[in-house]
Image 1: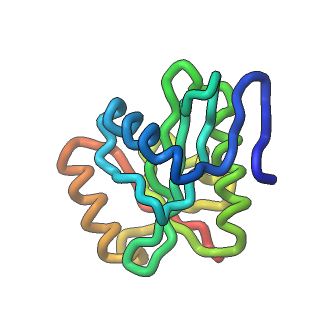
Image 2 (image 1 turned 120 degrees about the horizontal axis):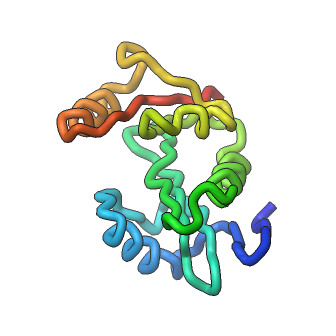
Image 3 (image 1 turned 180 degrees about the vertical axis):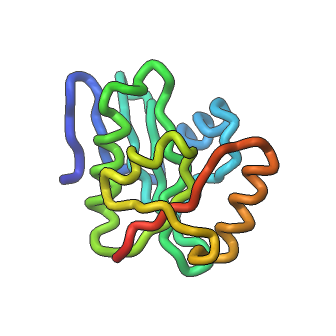
Length: 146
């Protein structure tokens, strides 16, 4: 499935043309991640405006789910779940890691992510989580097995 329409929100694969809008949303949301041309993008669009995004990246040889965000007025409407499902389709049977906020563990668990003990996680993710926690963020490392 390339796109799924629900009401007036289109969830689709992003293209390089979407990168400026995604980068602007990340700035608006104070998200430090950088969307790159090599990322696989899943976006939610309303009235030709991107209102949600999630990226699949490759870091240190690991596939990562990164930067999932939805505009506040579209949260808790199912848009995030629809984006997550399209992400899952693109992921296929590959292993994937993510670092969600603690309150989103069940959300990511919908597609098979499970909390991972730091001793079982890649070192770069452990370092990233330690930095996030030093800033007061409550996050965890999760892995979706292949």
